[in-house]
Length: 557
Image (cartoon, rainbow, N blue to C red; front, side):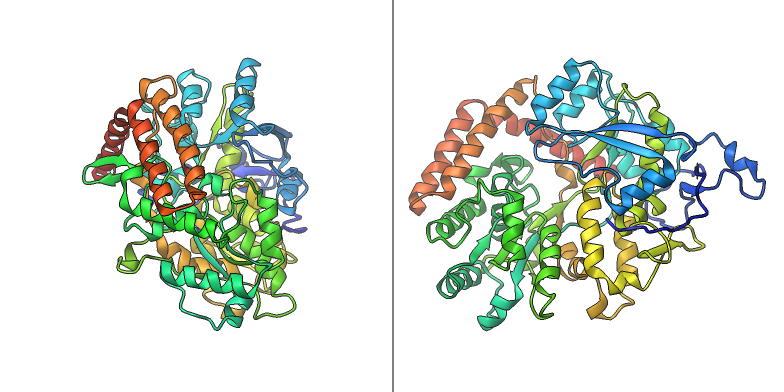
């Protein structure tokens, strides 16, 4: 995220100073010692060198990093201001190992080589679980108790949810939280909306009428942009418009029905949304290459203003930059968020275009191939603390940067005037360094920026933070009970899951291009029958049990 220029030049010989904290419940966010980078000696106080914690900046720490995502490409370490500052001041060098377009195949190659990367970053799924079960991941419990930040900011509930069957913790969470967060929703082009008379845009009927108006008036504009629809973006948001309390979405091919999880194909809300999506596709009201386009192509359309409405699981990242670009010449142009679209008659307060869970997004793991796992954990713990988070989110500290060190409480960044005066530069920095936030601390980041932004006039507030506070954070549902539902691949349910997924991917694509409402429903019914024939019910029973178990665990905390 942000930049740090020439700040803290007196911190050239670096060490990490962290105090061991008692366990906390995550609710109290009072002052906590951070893994502060300090000179090797401060007024002769050698206790800082004798606390047993890993010291950065003395010897280089070289780390190999693999992101288990087929489409993820880590930015060049040291090329952006944030990672450059970490590289220069803390002597940390991170070398990326790419997935080469096929994450599963790449991971198999790494396993076969018998030399895993130091860090594997990815979903809490069966691939990481297999590594854990094979003894190839390092348990983190001792480090969690030794270093302060994760233990303090996550709290016991999150840490307990991370425990494996053996009672140990192997996963360092990313964007963990104790409150709603997320960016899913709908973004609207200001100029087009203004020129069309700023009509009511609340219900699915309103949206449909608006998109038709856009198509008639602006032939070169995409009325409804989905983003990467093959991953559910855009179409999942439309599904949410037709179903109250929709927390599971399509990721499990199931919905809750009383105390059971049942087939998504028979869910009335999903069936209505599939018909709606197909209608938009037939009438060319949504992007016609929704299943094949790349993020770069989506970004280009947004940057040039050729999108009227954009819905996605995270439209913030691309829309933030596009808004800055379009508002350069005319502050009245750009993009804005609207409240979630809903079907007339539903309770709008129970419509969630996106979800969050208290464990956050994904996890970082340290493999047994790492020569110094404690040093790697110390780096991750620093990154998730106030100082590390600030470096990654707001760039290098210093009077010429966006923040100039932490205040006396050791937690709150001291923001400079540049924070509010250079929103474009801030957005650019965050668009790069954001891809290197592997252990994001949601509570710290959200509370910090929201508290500071509230002191600024609206015209000076960060665009993303403004809309998060106004719209997106209020409209995300708690999906914590649905974590870790998927079965292991080598189990009976795992084999069923793979076949069900294949059926799902084909059915979703076919339904998007259904020529009539009847054809769409036939596609869904056929997918349901095919899934049931290969054991779908056994899979549904399995994830129902996991879901109920999660509910019991959450109630017990």
